[in-house]
Length: 115
Length: 112
Image 1 (cartoon, rainbow over the protein chains, first blue to last red):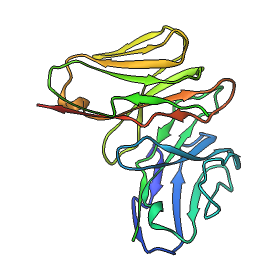
Image 2 (image 1 turned 180 degrees about the horizontal axis):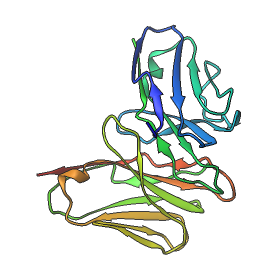
Image 3 (image 1 turned 30 degrees about the horizontal axis):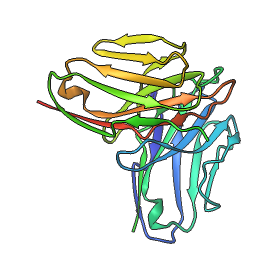
Image 4 (image 1 turned 90 degrees about the horizontal axis):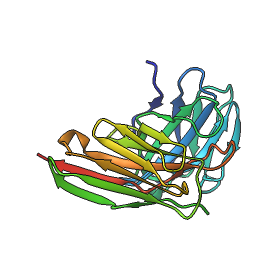
């Protein structure tokens, strides 16, 4: 499809396990964002990539969270030693590299549940 | 730290009623976006306002950007059940800052 694709759509894991969430942005979009969202709340910024590099990772809550985008397209959000508080919907968005803040195109999210 | 306050947080109305959602900040934004999100989906852009005092209309939705570019409002006329969802505002800083500042959202339920 032409939209942002996120996998898995649902992930249930146990506390302490390692998790990877994948985002496939719209082709040609150089900007890629990861957000975390709790039920009924607005998105919480985690990290923003411009091409392969993380332009702003100030939203990552701690060193258990890490994200990569090695070829400037697909990105993976990695969470080590998961905790129950990590449970949320993780949203990925991409946009064109235009001046200022352009339209963000979001995926449907990956719902993470840590038991 | 830039913050965007949205009000009300929750709104439950009957079909046909009018409503207004507010998005306020003490900071100036170069532009402000409004998104709508349905359950199980990501937010979808409704409109971007750029100029202070700007008013944009999208069918029954009217968006206004404050003169000082610190606040915005979304007015829905004759709400319909299909308008139900989470409405989010997001402000962009000056220059090439691509990190949007997000409000917490307004959860709207329109009852038939």
